[in-house]
Structures are given as structure tokens and as C-alpha cells.
Length: 276
Image 1 (tube, one colour):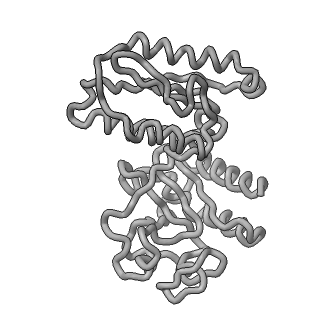
Image 2 (cartoon, helix red, strand yellow; image 1 turned 30 degrees about the horizontal axis):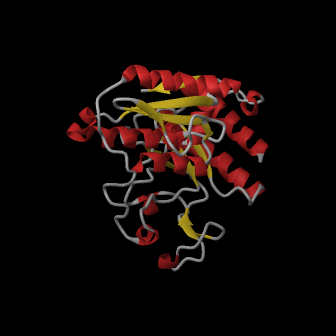
Image 3 (cartoon, helix red, strand yellow; image 1 turned 135 degrees about the horizontal axis):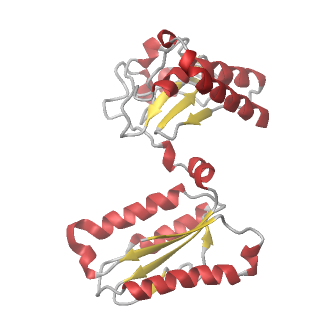
């Protein structure tokens, strides 16, 4: 499995290094949100071993083993990253080779820091299984995906982190849905963390207080702990005045308590971050 990943990495690096010499007329890529993808991508058919598309009268899944598809983050214009788009043929050959050599490798993905991904095997992006069989599906509001928010990308890009969110829940946050927007932003960051990261929340209004479900200690960002942290925020209402000083005192207290906790000493994180 590790060698398969290395092969993909070597192929990507070699392609990028030699791209200035590449014949751009040979560039072919397939958009996962293209309604007519099934008529353009090679060998789009029912393949076993990838789940079951019952609505498509398929005992496997409707896809192409011979080419990946491009999926773009919402803010990325298709085709704006020429190098990554042109990578399709080269990376597709490696993906296919990996698949043929190891049937346990089902899905393969390469993500770009510019918000694009090469997904293998190639298939339509869809909100429901049956959409893949419909002509013209997926719809124009294809659910694009930002790879940069995914834990595997965040972890590789930034290493392990200890993060304390300092969240204003004072009365001023009741205007213009500020508190809802802030809570939504915190949840999205929490979702991007990995189990190597540690996280805690300090709320503040007239005074500051910890999330009662994790107390005065940071938690590893495991799936269960992420749910716990979100539960802390679920019914949070804005109230009181604004005490910034008390909030930051508690935030630094969390870092000091983390440093004193012997259970954390064997695996220190690379960065300590306060998100305010």
C-alpha cells in the first residue's frame, strides 16, 4: 500500500518538473460535475467491487477504471489550474496500475492546494445514487468539495496542533446572526482536525468559561470528542457584556495545563494556536 502511494507521488512530481516540455494538446481532463460525463470519459460502465448502483441495474458502480475525474472547490474555476488538469492522463495510468496490482485499493485521490482533486475511479459526483443514471445529472448546483478542509490535507500541510477557540458569546453577537456564523466557522475548523490535534473552547461574555463538557483540559480531536465539542456549542445563546481579558487568560491557562499534563508530554504538538 505504501509503495502505491509513493508511485503516485513520484508520478506527480515528475510530471510537474517536466510540464514545461509537455505537449499541451495532449491534455485531457474530465469534470466530475459535467452532466454528460458518462458520454465523454472512456469505458464508463458497471464495475464490481465499488458498492451497488441498484437504480442503474448495476451490480457494482457506474464508473471508469481508466481515468480519474476532476472535482473543484466552490471558488475554483474549472480549468484554472492547467498543470493539475493535464495531470489526468499520467495519474490515471498510475491509479489503474495500483488498482490492478492491489484490489484492496478501491479509491485514490490526489488533492491540490489550489482546491482541486483528482478522484479515481472516475464517476459522476452526485447527491443520490440514482442520479448517476439520469441524462443531464448531476444538476448545475453540483456539490463541489474543498480538499483543503479535509483532515488528511490539513495534517500534512500544518502538522499537529493544539488549538484553543476563544468565542465571543456576548450580547453584541446577537446582531446580524453573528453568533450563528461564528459557531458554524468553529465547527468547520473542528471537522478539519485529526486525532493528532488537541482542541478546547473558551466562551466569553461578562466573564469567560470553558466548555463544560471538556473542562479545563484540551481534548484530542477524535470523532467522539468532536461531537462533544459541537454539543457544547449547540444551544449557546448570546448574553452579557464583553470581557476579552478574562477570555485570553483562560486560553493561556489551557496551554499551561497542557504543558503540565504528563499524559501529553510524550507526544507534544508542533504548534499552539489561539483562534479568536
